[in-house]
Amino acid sequence: MINAFVLDMAMGGSTNTILHTLALPHSAGIPFDLKRLNELSAATPDVCKVSPSRPEVHMDDVHRVGGIPAILKEIDRHAKTGLNLDVPTVAGRLVDSVSSAADADGDVIRPVANAFSKTGGLAVLFGNLAPGGAVVKVAGVAAEMMEYEGSARICESQEEALRGILAGEVKDGDVVVIRYEGPRGGPGMQEMLSPTAAIVGAGIRAALITDGRFSGGTRGLCIGHVSPEAAAGGPIAAIRNGDRIYINANTCQIELRIGDDELRRRLEELPPFEPKVRHGWLARYLLHVSSADTGAVFDI
View 1 (cartoon, rainbow, N blue to C red):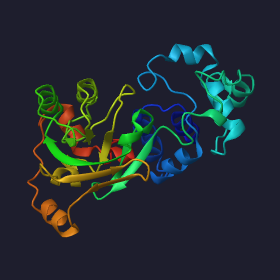
View 2: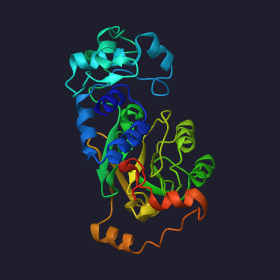
View 3: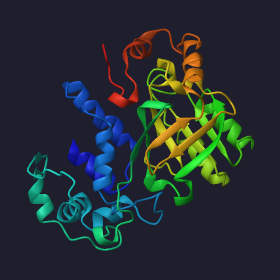
């Protein structure tokens, strides 16, 4: 599991890796503190970027210069990340693949000394808005957006958000909040790729936060997996239009700029969650699924 997280950090990979890999220890009954991911990120240089973070580079280019073993070889040589190469894989021992891999080519896979950044491509943010954590792909965030504060613009679904963005209702300085799209609220945790692409395409200087998820194609200050999710009564459900939200991807913070008493009062006043689905397997699913901080698994 640590190997998978280190690799994801080293190539600025998808936030989905965190979601799915977290499900493994939870299902096995092994505690895993999400803050450990920030420790791994701090120790893992980002040596490889692919589209859209680097539009001219694709996975076939990575494969051409040595693939995953070449990335792990460069990281294992020069960074203390906790990689364990003495493990079996479907292709034999991982250490054999890594030791025989090509050296970093210097372009698609950079040497650690010339990494895209000294730290990994993903971060987990914590604060009163996401006590259970929220995930951002920092490899796709512009330097000037790493610390940001803006006004909340609430959307209760992905479709509502996309309509507002395309209609020009989202402005510079906004924080688009898409909620009730988490594992329970979706149900099923929809991918928020369309709204994020629309914000970038429109050239809007805005952030986006959601209890939904993203694909590997996401870029910009887009924060997903906010936990607990809105449907579980998480603080994201208590945000109101115009509230100020502070985000610092450097220090892993995400804060709703209201007092503790006000936040507590709002949470106590939340109406009961009304499921979108009331019959069939999806209805059963949403009754038992956990929030994203434990991998959106059945927690019966």
